[in-house]
Image (cartoon, rainbow, N blue to C red; front, side, top):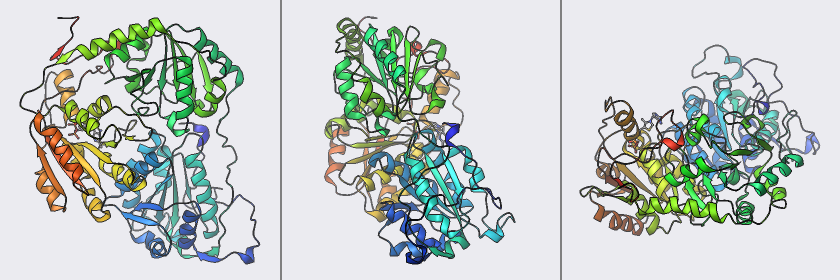
Length: 596
Ligand SMILES: Cc1ncc(C[n+]2csc(CCOP(=O)(O)OP(=O)(O)O)c2C)c(N)n1
């Protein structure tokens, strides 16, 4: 995150400029309707094109909720404020628009914090509106008072405490602008109860800007030329494709760029879907649970062109062993990312789409025959390697592959965090942008169901599946009530191993099998679903996987499928913590034809 993007928030009782209107008014004051702060908030959201907000009411936002029904906005009543933030995050990722969430002061606001941090680490545009205690009560430890601008300063791109009703509209205009522009992120707007109740003339500003905030969209042409030279000269190049490609809407030009340069593509966890995995030049997932041939290629590459990713440690493994022979080109909109984790030989600061628009004209048509042939040998070796199925349990990778086959790879898939997340990333095969929703940077358990709620509301045309673990599902299963109330057709696949699986796997592999506090009991998920008025199905063998998925798709509305898998199934390959990507370890059931 660029510190240049962050300015000091208004603190309670301070004279900070935050929240002060900065734009010229275009209509004479007397012609503007006089509205309450609550009405101004709703009218501003409407003017911003917001059609859905996710929230939970409480004392400080009662005035806001009083006004809300009179505006053409759909409010989704979640069952916990964190899910409001994560639903807004899922809505934003699925639609490309800004997601909006609302919470009351104090505990409502603090419950948003994890969701905001999630959006911050994954660069997702979210605007959170929180109620604050009335201004005369600020600083008095009033009932449900917390300094939410102070608390969220490190986990938001920016935040505001609004001091006057006439500041609400310009502040929201600026908040939306900041959330979606440059490197996107969450912005919080805290509004005291008496400011909601006070009146002011309303006009929504036509434009927004902020002194000192100028995202670097256009690249330096000299750096672009150096990048093109490196690409034209490379013998064993790779492109590392990240989330930034989708955030900048660069998928089309990226595909043309890949085909022109003939450079194979590897994906970060959040980059999946920015280029079809079915394309011959798409190699697959990199990093800790990446495909073996992908990490093998990274080890041999003489050039790595990172577009829109931040060299997260789960992608790089031990940095000193990362892409050891490669010159590094790093394209990123955020200058603070350049050289932060991995040195960049050719830094290019700019929006991915703007960079590709100029870079594409400077790169030569190439086909890296020998290099692709070598990668194919590695890839074929992976494909030829047989994995002995566990006879009595549904294989986790088979669940994901069957889901992909049955949905023809077209579904939007949201996950929780853990082993099931990695099986989904490895085996679904994403061919469309913004249909893979996962918590990458923060690794937020509980993300799957609320983000699927947000995604389904934003993209009702898409088939939406949440793939969750039995641990994560138990964090956010209260959203089944929201799904029921909203009549959302969201299918939930619980990969149920009776453990906090990923932690158990680390204890198994790296802590001498010392299972400490990872066995987790659960309710009967079929009965639980039924208690929420939702169909529940259970799968106990490989043979039952496909019929259950097919049956779920014929049922209109939500379905929960409880896939009871082998409790100690591990996800492979895995790069041990602190190791380099070339040191990945494999399933003991793995039969590599070249090694037996
Ligand atoms: C909120 C939160 N708490 C703790 C963790 C640490 N953690 C990462 S994966 C994991 C286990 C997840 O278990 P489960 O949801 O059952 O999924 P599985 O790994 O078994 O597929 C835990 C506890 C986390 N990522 N997020």
